[in-house]
Image 1: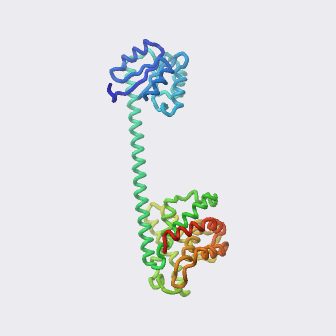
Image 2 (image 1 turned 30 degrees about the vertical axis):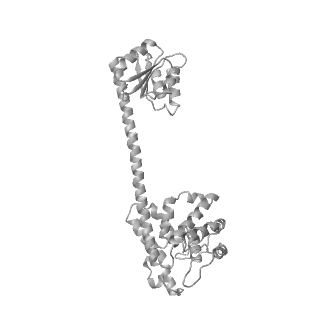
Image 3 (image 1 turned 60 degrees about the vertical axis):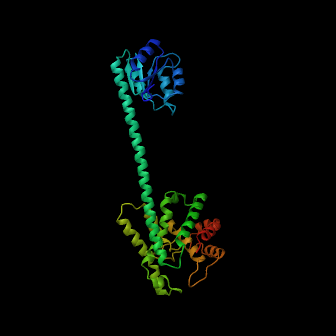
Length: 359
């Protein structure tokens, strides 16, 4: 038996028609005769044919009933069906097409015409399968290329963040820790169903890596200020504050030179708003409450918590408990009160993240 030959099931309750049809087709196809709908479904449990030739007028289960059953089953619904019938009225033909038949051949039929119809529909199915395979392969290639672009984008973000952190010798591990804090906050938001509409629109594959750029503007701050071994004076503090607008300008410049903005949209909002405060006393714009994007509210908590537990020339590292107390006391002044409540549920996660990355 040639396993490459296409398989056809011929369904007809007339023994003469079955024999005639089989003899007509056997030189070109592997033919499986079935004298009834019941027998057809027995055969279908063993093989999946490339095409079914189906008589309409049969006792017990007619062709229309059979095709309805075929099309309702995922295993069989894609098998092309050609109706064979002595009916010549238009309504019967239309009904056959409506039920999913691909063609309608009237009896008596000539062998050349039937063979040509069969060959055409098998070719169509092969072309359809080739197109589907091509589409699947194309989709896979797009996914692979997208993954490559994502890896490249993330590598660029990480490299820039590492460069900033290398210059700011006092904040080692800060970028990695703040990403972990943000992840914990967002997971708790989702769990509690808070800010669901906003968070549902975020792509976490972009959001968390983009947070690495929250202090990218520090790359323009003088080393004398960035690494001063003492508390900054007011003038120096004003210069330090410019890292926000410098960072925003840098991200916007990148966005203007590329058509791909998705991985920078969050970075722009985080970098530009993480020093704003709930009561409007923050910088650079003095935004307050809902004027501040959610990204900025979230990063504010992550950023301040990490600054509190870290050693600085002008202060010791606060304990986890002390840092949490300061954040709780700043509820409704520095921080979004809703997010402070969320933070209160996951303080242990912050502590674990801090210890995991270390100073």
